[in-house]
Image 1 (tube, helix red, strand yellow):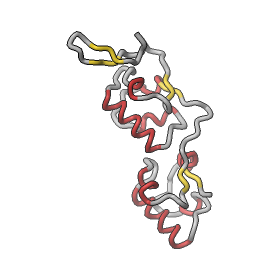
Image 2 (image 1 turned 30 degrees about the vertical axis):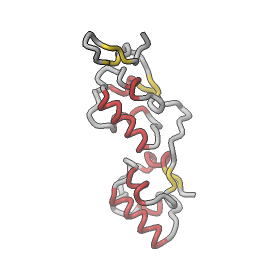
Image 3 (image 1 turned 180 degrees about the horizontal axis):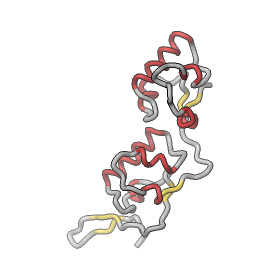
Image 4 (image 1 turned 135 degrees about the horizontal axis):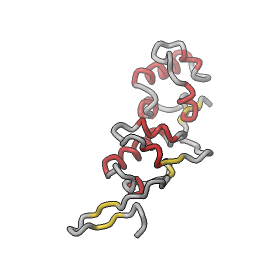
Length: 151
């Protein structure tokens, strides 16, 4: 029986067979069935991980899995992210409000600042254009870099 696949119990209900400790899955390619093979992850959390990955545009670091609320402590030990992982990028200057606000690293208020800047001053050349705004002070711009472009 392949690990991570569902297996019926004596009542015919299907439960995923759990992976042994030491198993490592690619955080960007694991599907819900594979995720349910991790102890402590059921359908709810498997779906939550996949939805977050989609909103994010893909993971660039394993530690980002901790951004998904409610996951078991030490969950990152079950994952890896390929060194050449290339997340989906959003062009800050052409994306609509809905697309920008959907990204988990930008708040509604920050997106309002970005769109107001575009309307008033034109295209942003980089995060420096909004860095001085109070809503962006203290922001970890390195965290945003893989997910946004300005061309």
